[in-house]
Image (tube, rainbow, N blue to C red; front, side, top):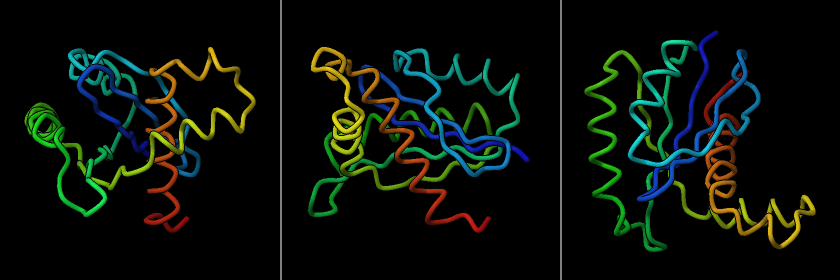
Length: 139
């Protein structure tokens, strides 16, 4: 079964998570500089069977698009042009970074480790993907 990949795209960093082969468990894959995302994905897609990409859609509390929406929309456009065979779905990513930070606290990470913004982005992508699996997948 092909994997599902989640992308928490940001201005500087992009967190990436992926499912197992059975699309049951979401795991953090990596965090990369955002400007290298397409190159990273070309390499990853050449090695792994990925059927779908989930990308966070940042919204404000009132449901309106956030200030980073335009940047992410450009990335989504580029992604769809580069990989037309891969389905792209957008999901609400509100609170994923806060949830990721709380997960780090709950996991017992020291303050210095919790300041690792790259780890927060990777965990946020994992939370987004696991939430997607719980909501939209019938296993």
